Image (cartoon, rainbow, N blue to C red; front, side, top):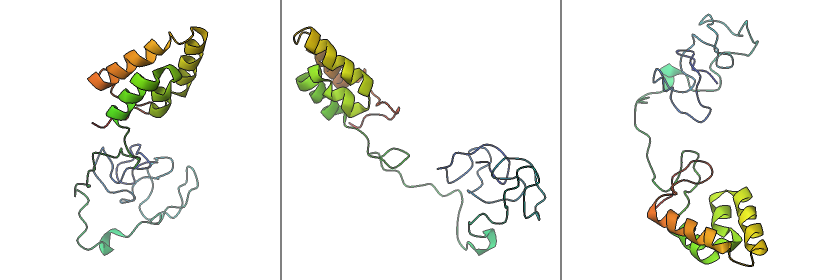
Length: 155
């Protein structure tokens, strides 16, 4: 997706362009599909063929008191995609008590590492559970502070 105002690449989930600050779908100088410059009155992009128009967004003149620079509300317990953050305390305690089974790794989204922890613990008759115990302590001390998606762990 490209900004219709400046033509720069734009995240699909973004409400505003990080380059120029224009609201999603506002502007008419660039194609939202390929980013090429278009005539503001064009109906179809000549480069990629996508229909232009208002792209299903409200017309700028009909927005009333809409302020594109208004700050979005922030909830520290959810990431940008709206999914709840993982708890640092829960992950740490799972690592300490069930680390040999890799439960904390599965909880944080590291499925491959979780399977490896199970195999190591089985092959070493439980000695490999030290790996999970140590990771549980590292999570609680903040040395491991993100899940598999790069989201921070909630306190």
